[in-house]
Amino acid sequence: MRRRLSSAAFPLHRHSLPQLAMDGVMVALAYELAYRLRFDSGMPHRYQLLLNRTIAWAVIASLVIFVFFRLYQKWFRYVTGNDYVAILQAIAVATLSLPAFVAITHPVKVPSEKGFITVTIPLGVLAFFFLLTLTMVVGSRFAARLMHDPRARGFRPSKDARRILIVGAGDGGRLVLREIVRNPGLGLNPVGFVDDDARMRGQRVDGIRVLGGTNDLARILDEAEPDEVTIAIPSAPGTLRARVVKACRARSIPVRTLPTVFELLQGGGNAVRQVRDVQVEDVLGREPVRMELDRVGAYLNGEVVMVTGAGGSIGSELSRQIARVAPRRLILVDHAEDNLFRIQRELEDDRHVHPAVLSAVLADCKEGERMREVFAEYRPTIVFHAAAYKHVGLMELNPVEAVRNNALATRLCARVAGEQGVGRFVLVSTDKAVSPATVMGASKALAEWAIEAAQQQWPKTTYATVRFGNVLGSS
Image 1 (cartoon, one colour):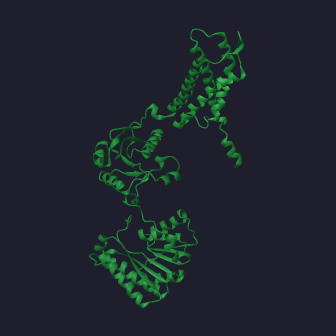
Image 2 (cartoon, rainbow, N blue to C red):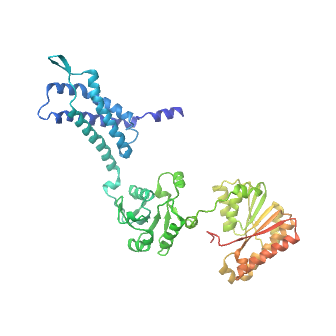
Image 3 (cartoon, rainbow, N blue to C red):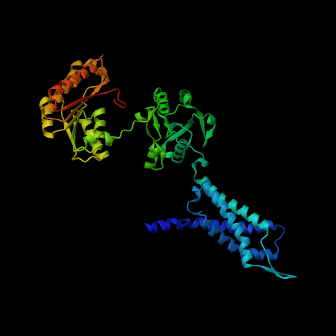
């Protein structure tokens, strides 16, 4: 480790030697031209001698100073504004080193009435040397940057490239645009920016025009006709994202978003490849509430927890949260094979829950014999009953199944839990159970009454009901 650090700290790398040689040639050429320009009508012999005896020092000293100022720690094409400042400082120091060298070494002396005197470098030569060296060194780096920058050659998207509108003309938007231009293989053609900063309206950002603000998005979408829209504001509030999504969905235009800064740091520098679809949390309009899960869920630690309906929207999220507080066993119960398989694979592969902790059980909560088998085999101490039908319209068309699955199945599970001595039983209900006006709401109200009756019959088991409103992200 120490060896790697010491080599990284040295300001010159073997791959920089061609750049070092190129700068040496430019310094020598600048020094020679400085004398020729200063003495354009003919150079006196003593200055020709001074040139010949000091040119080697000019080159060596300049290169040493350039190395000291760390001008060779990156390729010419990656030089930025701060590097140009370092170049200016290095050339100024190199120029000042020339008269200092002459004053110390006295390379050329000529006789005079008072004896021999040292020939000094004329101020005009120093000025020309500074300007010529600065022009050549900076120019070489700028030329290399232009040669490797696709924008300098002109961006020509392919004929089948997808037209993309970028929301946000700030750093995030420019990052996305830069990646699109540098990587034609992405098959994207930027048609414009959208930004709410009034000062940027009509301006061009890296050659792409700002077409207007998000309040004008409907008009912009109709005029630009993009194939997709990318929100390139990592810190954009949910209200802005919701406004963009609403306008795009009305025109069947897909919307994607740039990840947060934290996600960008995790995923590397290619911003375009990290662009993802807009998620429900992005359009919430506020920051999600962060629960202190370790404290709130501490009572689940070391317990055998069963979640019925574990493959559903609420059941799957319950399973994810419960898995984080280290239960002794987590029993996932669902009658839908695909949903059960999906949440099991997610917990094991993505969330690294040990397979020994998980048990995926295919069972229907309406079947009493099967549920008694499950309770007897796994002996849960806490049960979250989230299995239910939730679609109001479908339940209106299938009222008998609504009552069987939501009410009778709940009564059955509550009875089995009481018989098996389960410590806690929690029913996941809905606000539609309050003064129910639909079959779905009435079936959940019946389920709540069944829980109240079970508490009276099996007092050793603690029964509870929680009501949810509309669940974000639920199908």
